[in-house]
Image (cartoon, rainbow, N blue to C red; front, side, top):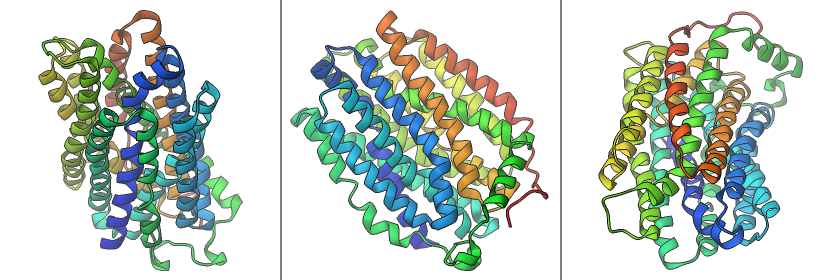
Amino acid sequence: MLPVILAGGVILALAFGVRSVFGGIVEPLSNDLFGGRIEIFSLSIAIQNLVWGLAQPAFGLIADRYGDRRALWIGLGFYTIGMVICALGTTPLAQHLGAGLLVGMGISGTAFGIVLAVVGRAAPVAKRSLYLGIASALGSAGQVVVPLVAAWLIEWLDWRLTMLVLAAMLAPMALCIPYLRTTPSQGDRPGESQRIAPAALIGTVVSAFRHPGFLFLNAGFFVCGFHLGFITAHLPNYVEHFCTGTSMSPEELRAFGLKALSMVGLANILGTVLAAQLSMIFPKPYILSAIYALRALVILSFISQPVTPSSVMIFAFGMGVLWLSTLPLTSTLVLAMFGPRVMGTLFGLVFLSHQLGSFAGVWLAGDWYDYYGNYALIWRVSILLGLLSAVLHLFVRERPLTRGLAT
């Protein structure tokens, strides 16, 4: 398991770390290209999140039919090209193509849907939640390191050169992809005979959407995506314009917002491992319910007091503990309900719901800010959605589906 977990952790760290810096360039890119209107590039980031979700089932299908590594290589290619186009593009169309479509495809092929499917198949059943949590926590290290690097680069270089440097930082993925493999007994697909028949795959998907627990997980993950997409894309801008009690310049406040995202990543390491450990003691749906309820409480506390550097960091730590701790729990529930055979496809469908939520959070926040100059409504919607998700997960049952599964 060690090579699989380490290689998967590095790939997740780079994929998720580079993706987390887009919120830090919203303001300088919009000022440079679009006269200060942040809605245009917010739409690019929203497209990125939407494409990430829409492409996830397709990449899951590629992984299930032709192998995980093939899906990862395709994703790395899309990711690198998209970053370069983002750095060099000068029009809305170029940004929608680069930062939006291509980077979204790249993340889809290199992030959680594919990597966690490999780790889940390779892990022994008794420790599956723990190993998924460790891989996710290692991936969170990217959100600690990369935003700090980006904040330093933006101070010394312009946003274009920063994006090119970040594109080059994706290169180590190529060294890790060969290690993401499982043995035949663990569910890898080395031969044609082990590939899933299309009819069996379709039957499993249809059966999944008749499973109430699967539908509730999809609804809950939509909320998770709304939270993560909105905060990742807009927290630096929120800090720049609404943080008080400091003598920092707007540029320094924007960099501070990136550092807050780094704190999110650091706290997420603790939260993900803690959630994985708790899942070995308590029912996973109840842990997920508690996570979403606590998110609503953290957001309510944050917006109920003046925004200061201290409150921003406290908020970042609190949300970080609750950030990606949903991923290993949700993916483990999908595995428990439907088995490892079609994990890539089914988790891809769940993750599509997550990214639909991200699209809504990123785009609506940018549109609302351009019209009203604040994020007040989006914060309140985030609280209500968190409470709704907490209730839905109380009705999820960790019960395996016995009929209609691909064999």
